[in-house]
Image 1 (cartoon, rainbow, N blue to C red):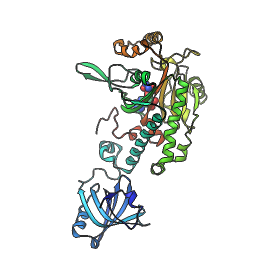
Image 2 (image 1 turned 30 degrees about the vertical axis):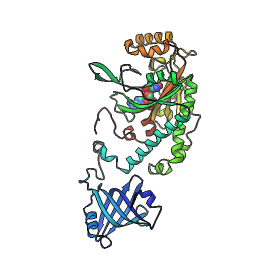
Image 3 (image 1 turned 120 degrees about the horizontal axis):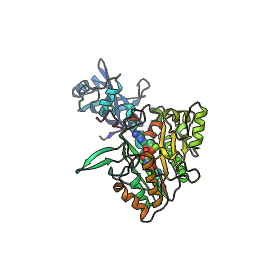
Length: 435
Ligand code: 4AD
Ligand code: MG
């Protein structure tokens, strides 16, 4: 007989089925062994009665341990006494592979769970989060594919820093210096010229030694780049993208959200338009709340929190001071202290989920802005590394905009996770490279 999933088996009570999965719980009471079996689709209680099965099957069930992989035949029925609502009465039991004593028991430290991450991924919580993560990837791609974007695949090894360059992981590339990319933006720009609307979905690397609940050293970065878009049009696209992800989860994954104790109605209300505050307005609001920020100051965790804690939807803060934003953003012609950009802030203090801007697309403006940034920040761009990217402005150019969305930040917010490390299967942080 063919193995079926638990979720399908419970739909046909009375039928003979074979289930394959993992021993989630086990207890014995005299001549009956109860196990809770787990597969990708859920849990079900199984009753193995000594006098109802062969001696071999009984012995197999006796020897089976927590997290062994097993195949069990039987008939399923509804049973209000079962913790899973259903019970399978076993007619056969086989161990595919016995587990040694499982290193994770009920109350474990966070550190141990991170050390045993490869096994902790079998926990109910992580199973649900990893499913949700996969749906977030799917819905993000779905939205962009339907909106006429091409998915592109940028290189990870690069010589040109895409952002400040302050947090680059350096590596040896056949005797010369290379970096793990901190953003694929520069390559997305090159590909937006021929393809008009592109996105890359790839890891970005940040050697930030900050131990916060929002920073990973390796995260998944969704970076769309659009020809002929200004930042206003880009913001409209960003809110539709984020809304699509949230509302699709709400409508398609109700059971999953329930398991994660997330109210789907809250997610279904994440719809455009999102609030838009200029940097100046945001600064004013924060100072009204008692902060003492000066014009030009960047916002920290506590400011982001104060700005968004009462919000149910994300909001934009646009047109930031040029000193605190990267070199590729154009000066705002209406206020030359600022650049044409925006950050999207998630509600309830989950922090920045998107950073985006227009790009300087004219050669002379780009070169003079890069010089200005060098003076201002006392840095020196290695122009050799940027020549190809500057070439894009030399050989026919066009206005364009783009943005970067941190997928784990979005997952942390949507699933209300305490820490970003739980939004990714194998987190890389300043103090963790294993497993
Ligand atoms: O604001 P950032 O640094 O912007 C860029 O890299 C642009 N080049 C993107 C672009 O325009 N194509 O990063 C973009 C987003 C942030 O808003 C945040 O969501 C996420 O990337 N992010 C991180 N996520 C996890 N861990 C980190 N250390 C992150 N740093 C940024
Ligand atoms: Mg940013």
